Length: 396
Ligand SMILES: [Zn+2]
Image 1 (tube, helix red, strand yellow):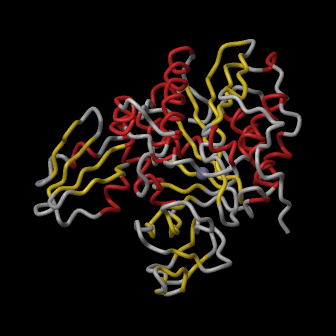
Image 2 (cartoon, rainbow, N blue to C red):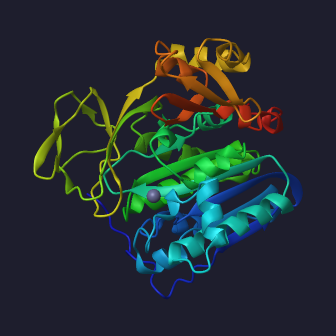
């Protein structure tokens, strides 16, 4: 049974852009938490208010921020007002909004958040950690989503919950991809189903674990540390698998999409399983795998994902290959050339390099492809990652 928490952030609860800032007694890393980037996902905001109020700055080594996302949508308890705030974060889109004379509610939120982000990067010490707290419309285990850079993977592997890689290949403009492009560790945490009480308690547990794993708080300074760890482990059914996204059903503009009832994230499905209705036609699973984030709300453009576990052997192999920067060899192959080596952008001529398979690019850290009719563009997360500033951290 699901315990439902009070749904909206009613007017008695004041939500500021900065939910809290704790400057520690000693210098150290900077950890930034976002809650409520989607206005119907209030759990993160509640969790941040709760945790930040309970931390004594005398024990803090570094700086902690809690930031609320879409204030206007949070007030109405809706995902967004006009545009999804978590799909606006591309350089081009931000510039476009900056150049506008008038902008809508969500674009206004983006501009404010963008300023907050730039200011805090200037005012604080590296290493930086960014965590974005979300919930899902379907029942789910708590899990982490990350862009596939080794710093993200290594930091995430400390948590006793599943990790899903590569979602950014399918989404345009989430906040975390933007921060990742700047090279910092950034994690998305999906704590549970919207308005489920455990979505709040899981977020609280995750916030404390993040503070300990980043070295801002000592384990001894968090009285319930082992309880929080155990809670997430149990809530995740002891699943610590690393998955990658292999499929997305993207909902088209005029498509009437309805997920069939009863699917839960991470539930195993067979190829051919009936999953949803699209304009009154049945959609069957195109692959074996696990269903991921099936859509059970009106708003949202992603119907469902399918994910698959990555074999531990391949996780290890990709770590080794990326460390020795094997991708420099790629650019020597016919049909493959650098667009920008510093930014890690490769161009692949498909008519020449037809044989190059997607899994090979994945192994080497390439994601986020943009395809023209003849060319593939690939971004390497490793080349933009500020790996150096994390090398001395205990988890690296
Ligand atoms: Zn969300």
